[in-house]
Image (cartoon, rainbow, N blue to C red; front, side):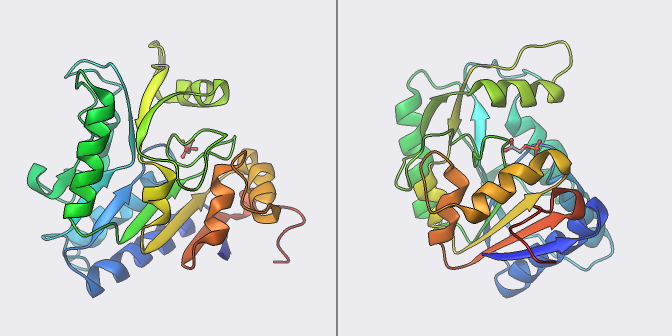
Length: 244
Ligand code: PGA
């Protein structure tokens, strides 16, 4: 893994957006697998700014959802698709026909997951996966333990995830069930960009960097991928695993 440490969240957002823009310049119709959560928001805002300044042309860009909660109504404020819509799709003017989303309200979640995988395949696969890191080492909602070949599936969220996601939704409970792109989808992306920000992530990042690929630390499977860039800000910089 190529681990880059930058000064702060602003530098992280800038560097990450520059990398996304590089992918889009190479392949204007690239398919991004895009996380929600707090960490990617600066990058998405930077991409919107670059579009305004005509430094990025997302007119053919395609975006797939990484994960979502299960069992929410159409207009539920906790929908992760709605969050992605506000933070990324609307600012970049990416219309519905250039997105791949989970049909998380579908009566048969397993079938909805197969439809999602089929859509990713039909789109030619993921060019760049943009990921945050969970405090328990999860990627998307691939909670520990998750094997490298885990499929897109419905999951129960881990207690740590329920606790950390609670900060997204004031006054409403975090749904306990979710769907996630499987580790197999993430690992088949041509490139992976993992953002890590803040002191509370330093210990888990350190464990991931030191670990062999291990289902108990899903992000450690990234060691088997040939093209992973980790951008961490100084606060998330692990004490021992990195020299810089
Ligand atoms: P965060 O979430 O970006 O809000 O820290 C990351 C995650 O839990 O996957």
